[in-house]
Length: 381
Image 1 (cartoon, rainbow, N blue to C red):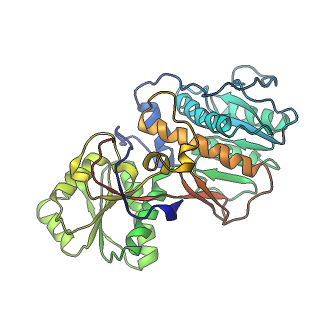
Image 2 (image 1 turned 45 degrees about the vertical axis):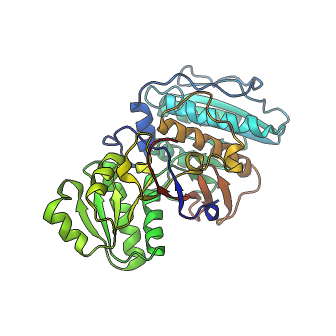
Image 3 (image 1 turned 30 degrees about the vertical axis):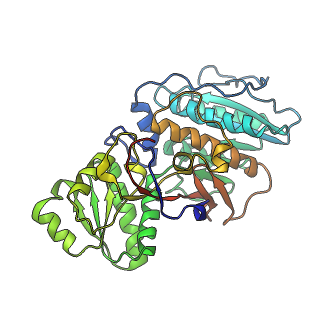
């Protein structure tokens, strides 16, 4: 899908809430937990009841419903999501809704699904073992880095698609991952800036943890590709003489910042300095100062008329931007699960997804490549 979207003009969606408390690739899950409560996202089509019983042991792991029965199905998918978690239950339910919407849209008669909701790490192990005993041939989940680190050593012959990054973990056979990591976006933007001919970028970052992780990801990628480090400036010092000095040797600026801080900085930048950012600048509120900023974001939000995106129904009710992203993650999780249930894909295998172009790396992480966009206004169309 990437080659369908050279620097296009557009306006989109992203996070309206603060990211100050977010850490690492789990930030989108925490964002969802901190957002205003949403009503439950309904499954968009009726699904037949799976009759498997919940595992023995009580409340730690319980089975949700309804799903098509596994009996007689060629593709048997097990969902392993923390729907019983007080913190992450809502996020898990939205991923589940996107997964269910994709299943209903494709209407494949050879796919069966079963799931166990869990609340804590004890429940995670119990739920995983129950799914394997139930005969699934692929497991989708869990969602946090801690859960993934706990589950990875337990896995064996059944492929697992974890819904977060596995960075920092030793690769394991048949243990795949798909994540919404914004650090990966920073790496992609660094590569795009190099392709655009940028020679001397200025990187401006904020005081929050996520901004600093974006800074580190951009620094690592740019230095590896160019052999020299970019200039770096903290947002709280990005004014007056300090900003002028930093800009004097820079031919472009990368915002490792949320949308509002990016808008504040953009207003005082010279008009001849191209500005780049991640999808953090793509928000529902109108920030006209962001016009002209080049960024990346998922097709689900930026390309709603693309045939692949239109194939799947939108949520039945309005969601916050973080929950909308999780819904799209659920759609792609279903699409990848079908493939992983069969012949294992080889590194380099590519799938066009609603969260980006997905390419399998040697460490079995699906790398997302996102469409490139240029802001004309950040208000929602």
